Length: 154
Image: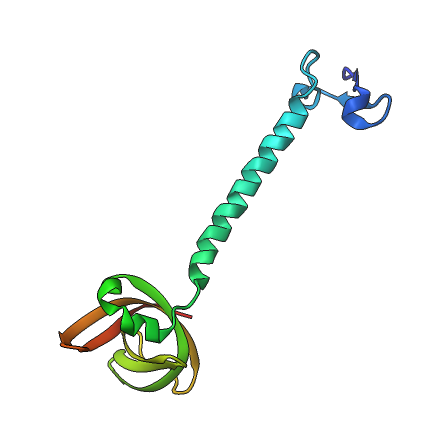
């Protein structure tokens, strides 16, 4: 016959006056005497670990949906943003693709910018959100040529 152990829990743990826990050869199921808050601490630790994991996941996903920068701001601050990645959103204008690479224009209410891509141009007049690296190609007096190198499109 297998041994049967009866363990009585404290009222603080279960909300009942007594609880019978039967464990056959499973010492981990029974809380050792003298350590009444072990399960509560374990649960808090698990919740804290789970919350930290969710925050980390939200941070990773949040990077995908950054607040779009108006194209006019990118054009005005091209020197300061040169080499940095920005997110722009707008409608696709004209463009051209050749062997999977190409360039296309994106327009919003503040301006128009050219985007260089290695994955082909999206359909004209479609809405796009782009993460792109700013490149100020040329500046002559007040005039400058600015473009984005597409990092990701969604």
